[in-house]
Amino acid sequence: MTEASTLSRPLLGTDEPKVSIERISKAFRHSDGEGFWALRDVDLVVRNGEFVCLAGPSGCGKSTILNILSGLDRTFSGKARIDDRNVLDVADGRTLCGYVFQEPRLLPWLSIEDNLAFVLRQNAPSRQVVNELVSHWLELVGLSRFRKSYPHQLSGGMQQRASIARAFAAGHDLLLMDEPFSALDEVTARNMRYELLSLWQKSRKTVIFVTHNLHEALFLADRVLLMASRPGRIHREIKVSLERPRKADDPELLAITRTLAEEFVSSSKNSSVE
Ligand SMILES: Nc1ncnc2c1ncn2[C@@H]1O[C@H](COP(=O)(O)OP(=O)(O)OP(=O)(O)O)[C@@H](O)[C@H]1O
Image (cartoon, rainbow, N blue to C red; front, side, top):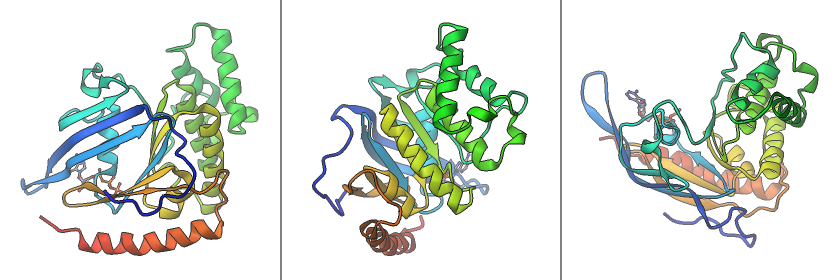
């Protein structure tokens, strides 16, 4: 890995690793039966409290990394650990992290407050604590007035805010986010990015965020890992030392985005096909 820019500010995370991935490889088969490497010998360490973005062309294995960490994909070689636990030692169906998908995936038959309460009940000791936590997280994402509403009564952006509140409320220290804003209009997405950073800074959780959008990655992250495909691998690390709070239209951010976009396009073109 090489570093594109290392500016003066230290990284936000502590040195303690929250996530460590060692030589992960994952193969799939095309529909004609031919195998290919979705990931090949991927190493990755994410420190406690860090915000890391995985960016790269479609099909380079970003979601596969999240699926391995969350326990959704259990057939791979290499080691994946969250804290000191091997993700394969966690019982099937259990997870060590929260996961926010591109679509909100709220339970449609439950109100917004019950969607949050559903996950909180698994950890919180009493109904009163659950209620307090629901109120706390809904207030942080500006949905207090909609707690009794059902998902279909909310806009796409509001539903995604509820799903982010649910992921933060669930109590895991690690959040995986797979293009959570890509289905939203740009104004809503921009506001959500500010909201997400505010939640992250208040909660000090560790976030691994997948995106195609380099500007989004550089705006959000402490570190951006650029991936390449065939085989899927991390080929470049960019430490983003821009001051926080950041502004989406900061000229320095826009300039770094432009430079990297050119490299991103050329690395997509140069990715060899096996
Ligand atoms: N269940 C599966 N069966 C076969 N191939 C798969 C399966 N899941 C993923 N793949 C393939 O593995 C590769 C990596 O997929 P992955 O979804 O991780 O990529 P990605 O970088 O997240 O892509 P995108 O940005 O388009 O979401 C792709 O070539 C994809 O087609």
